[in-house]
Image (tube, rainbow, N blue to C red; front, top):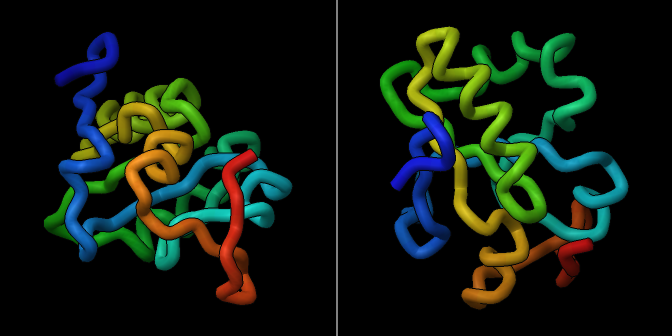
Length: 114
C-alpha cells in the first residue's frame, strides 16, 4: 500500500522487532508511545537526522509513525529520497492504540495517544 508515493504498512503488519521511528512532538510522546521506538520530532528531524542514521539498522526498514499518518508520510518520503528504506505506518499511533498494542510513558506506565 502507498500514501502518495510513500510505501505504507498497517499497524497489524508490524512485528515486535521492527525499527519504529516516532516523529510526534514532545508533548505527544510524553503522553504515550510505543515501547522501544526512537523519538525524533518532525520539527527537529532535519537537525537530528544523524541520530536516526546511528540508531537505524543498516540493512533494515525504518517504520515511521506519528498520530494519524500524515507527518510520518512526509518523513518517510524524506528518508526514501535519501536512500533509506522507510515506510509510513498507516493510521499512526491512533491505529496502534485501537488495535490494542501497548502505549507507555517514559516511566513504563500505561500511556495514551493525544
